[in-house]
Length: 468
Ligand code: HEM
Image (cartoon, rainbow, N blue to C red; front, side, top):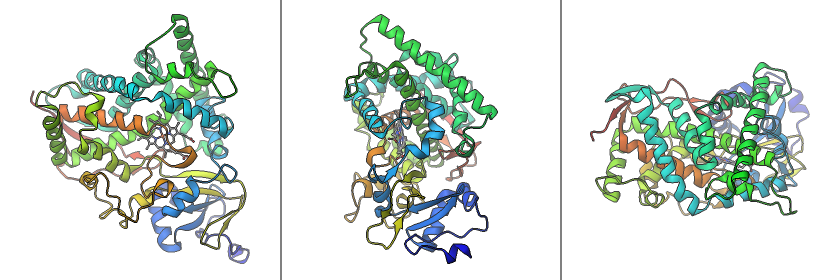
C-alpha cells in the first residue's frame, strides 16, 4: 500500500511484488526476456522493478535503446555498476577501474589495432586452430558420434582468440596452466558477487590468486618481447606495448596485462555462447548446413582452398548465420547504467531519479514482430537482401538490432567476433554434417544463471565427418 500512497507521479509504473528487498529479482533472473515481454505488455515500454533492493527502470523499444545507450556521461554511469564485479577479475586501472575518459582512450588503442592487415593475419590462424582442434580431440575420433557441443566451442573460442589477439606465446600457455587459471578467474563472474564481492568466499580467493598469476604471465611475456626487440606480430598485445596516452604516458605493463585479461573475458563469454548456438542451430537445420557447404564450393571452388579474410565477404549466408543467431541469442541480455542526475524521458511525463538504475534490453526489439516477422524462427535467409531493415527503422542507438550495444560503451570487438565466428562456422561446415540426436529441428533452452546467457547443458548433437 505504501508503494501506492507515496508513488511519485513522475516515476514509471512499479512492477508489483510481495517481497520488499528481493522484489522481482527471481522472476527476472529466471528468464529475463520473458520478464521484459510480460511487463511490457502490462505496463508499456517503461517500467520499474526491484532488483536486489534497487529500483531498476527498464526502457525497451527503439526510443528506450537510444535513451539509455546514448546517455551522456553526466547522466549515466556504467563503471559504478560493473566495477565490483570486473575490477577483481580484470585488475586495476583499466576498463571500469578508471575514469570513463581513460576507458575511451583504452578502447581507441584496441580499435586501432584491429586493422584489415591484422584480420588478414587472423583468419588463417583461426582456421588452423579449428582444424587442428578437431584432429586432436578424442571426442571427434572416427566417422560419427554424439557430443555436448558448448564445452568444445568454449575451447575453440579461447584458442582462436588468444592465438590471434595475444600471440603464439600466450596461446601455448593455454596448453599448460592458463586454461585452469582462467577457469578460476571466471568464477569471479558469478552473479552472486554483485552482492558479495567483498566476502571471503572460497571462489573469490581462487579468483584473486588466478588474477595475479595470469597478470604476471602477461607481464613476463611483455618483458621477453621487449628484450627480443621488434616484432612483425599483428596482435593486440604488441600494439598496446607501442601505445601512448594523450598525456604522453606510455601504457604501463600492468595495464596492458589487465586489458589482455579484459579482452579475453569479454570476448570469451560472448563468442563462445554465440558459437555454441550456431552449432546447435546447424544441427537443428541440416538443410541450412548443406546450403552453407554449397555456398563455399560455389564461391571458392570444389577443392576448398585455405580460407582467407577476403573470402568471408563473399559468403553472405555464412555471414547471415552470425547475424540471425545474435538476433535470437544476444549473450548480453541486460545492459545497466547508474543514473547520476534526474533524467526527463522525452515525450512522457516521467523523470528518472538518481536513485534508479537504468536497464536496456535490446533483445526485446530484436524479437519484436513489428521489425522481424515470425520473430522466434531462426531464419538466416531473412538477412538475404543485406538486411531486413524496413523504411521506418531507426539508425544508431535507436536501431531495433543492437547485439553489440551502442553509444560510448559500444563493443570494440564486433568486427573481431564476426571474423572469428564466420571463420569457425566456415571451417566446421567443411568438416562435418550435424543433426539433432532425435532428428528434430528444435534447439535447447537458455541458461540465464550466469551473467552471459548461453545454452543449457548437456546440449548434445550428432556429428558425421564429410566424405573426403
Ligand atoms: C562492449 C557484446 C565480443 C570487447 C560490449 C557491449 C555489448 C557487447 C552488448 C556493450 C556493453 C555495455 O554497454 O555495457 C558483444 C558480443 C560479442 C562481443 C555479442 C560476440 C559475439 C567481444 C570481443 C571483444 C569485446 C571478441 C574483445 C576482443 C568489448 C569491449 C567493450 C564491449 C572492450 C566495451 C565495454 C565498455 O565500453 O564499457 N560488447 N561483444 N567484445 N565489448 Fe563486446
